[in-house]
Image 1 (cartoon, rainbow, N blue to C red):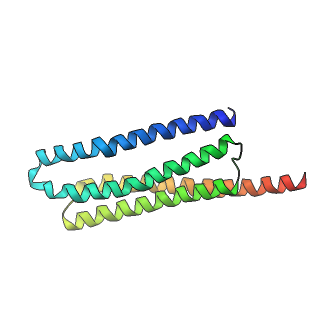
Image 2 (cartoon, rainbow, N blue to C red):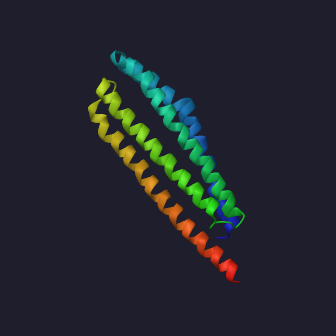
Image 3 (cartoon, rainbow, N blue to C red):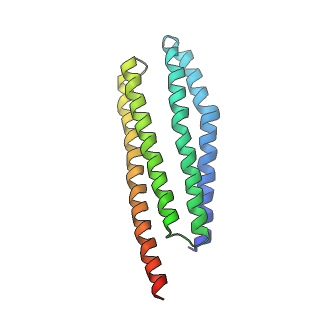
Length: 159
């Protein structure tokens, strides 16, 4: 697959992910919390703190999509192995790490404050683990792209 076609496919996936994220934040999350309030009115005081945490955790996800767009743009210009892309992958990894930490700490704090069901903590820790896995993968990509950029730069200088 040519780099420009690959770049366009990445951008299509990013646009689709952004639309799903916007739809989830604008409609799905509020609707789920309204239903939660109807089903469990005695737990309605849980809704506001959890909505805040979910929306705070959504911000790094959208920043990561912008970062992915910039990477796809560089790939489309046949500049895949550059230090700029290595830095963007590092930023992506740090966003995933930060988001995992915020969500994990928030879940634990809400559990201690009584705004969380202990049975849900396992699912929440799975979400944190997925974020940490993304962090490790993006950090590895950052390292490898940086090494490839250095090799490419050395190769360009010798020719």
